[in-house]
Image (tube, rainbow, N blue to C red; front, side):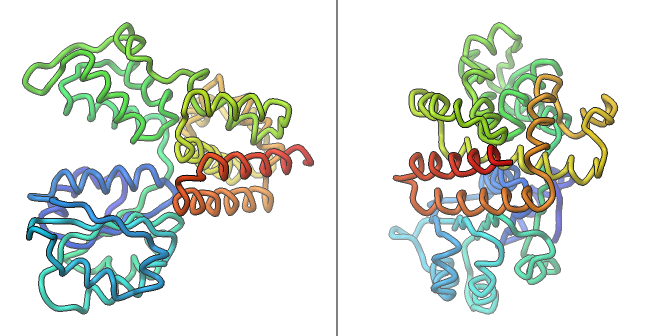
Length: 341
């Protein structure tokens, strides 16, 4: 079974009931992770969560099948959540499929993999597996997702408020879900007791603003503004910003630059009309920063940037205790590279 972000919402309930292996891939890691969380919510009894890494399963391809077919300590239900990179889990998934006996649900979020990867090809024609591909979202689709989240939480909000939440979250559906949850808690909203949510309530919960968010650091790094980096890294520590969240914002901007580079060719950003810019998620406040960043990151340099961010993401997940230090070092290297250009 195959799906994309366009039809995943409609297929999720059937997939949760029918499938035992779920492979979420594509450039939008945030969307893939959110989809995995949605499947867990839809499972009849998700039970205990067992987390594994792709590197672990690459070293021991038999482990996934053994773990999926073993019972929990008290015989309760369980599911396995795997964070992988590319085709790291190919052999492990192959061993899982050929094993005998009932297995618990296995959900795999595979950064850098696509629906053309070998793991996806292994699963896509099976009735008991789902392969879902997620592309970087645009503002309209995330705004629509925010309204769906709000309906489920018992919030009534208009399109302007939904769009503000989408922008504040940097088009990351996981951060947007967190804002919706905070807003519902603040207003004591529920599906049984819906509440209206306006700008006043959104400001009261401290929704992320440009000053409180990730983008000042992202813009300084990608523009090669090395003078601003120390102050931005200090702000990161003071506000306890999540290093992985900062890196996800970097990855989304890099993906946006790649989209723009492919769309523009030899043209300039200013050659696009307002509608084309909106479809690519360019807010007027961000246009100057994006135009400056495109002068630093084009062609082969942009490919190197994406590869650097993927490697840095992998390092952060492998060593969470040193994530802040690793992020600071990685961003400083990227900023120096941009400054030289």
